[in-house]
Amino acid sequence: EKLRALAQRIIPCGFVTAAAEMQRQQDIITITTGSTALDELLQGGIETGSLTEIFGEFRTGKTQLCHTLCVTCQLPTEQGGGEGKAMYIDTEGCFRPKNLVAIANRFGVNEEQVLENVVYARAQNSESQ
Picture 1 (cartoon, rainbow, N blue to C red):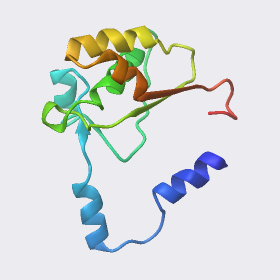
Picture 2 (tube, helix red, strand yellow; picture 1 turned 180 degrees about the horizontal axis):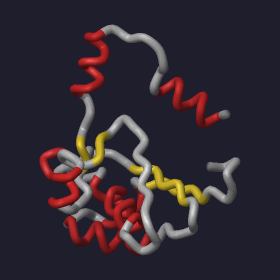
Picture 3 (cartoon, rainbow, N blue to C red; picture 1 turned 90 degrees about the vertical axis):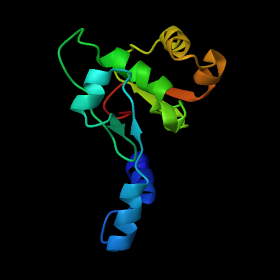
Picture 4 (cartoon, rainbow, N blue to C red; picture 1 turned 180 degrees about the vertical axis):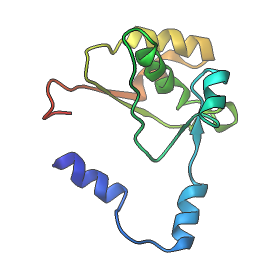
C-alpha cells in the first residue's frame, strides 16, 4: 500500500493535457545497458520514468544487467547515463556490491561514489516486494 501510494504521488494516474504529456516524454532519458547490441534492440537502452521488469532463464545475465544499470545510470548523459542514482530491490539475494566496484572501474567511475549512489533493499517475501 505504501509503495502504491508513493508511486501514485510520483506518477499520477488520470487525465493530463497534451502539453504536459509532451513535456513528460521529452524529459525521458535513455540509460545505456553497457551493451551496444542490447541498447540497439531496446532502441537506445532503458527508459527512465518507468519500471522495467527483467526476466529470463537461470544464468542469462539478469543480475549482471541490473548491476550494470546501477552504474550506468550515474554516468553523464553524454555517455548514455542519467546523472542519477539507483534503487536495487533484490528478490533473490543476488546483490553484490563488489560487482558494482568492478563495473565502476570498467566505466572509469569513482567506485566509492557509485556505492553511495545505490540504495539496496532485500525483499524477503511477496509482502515486502
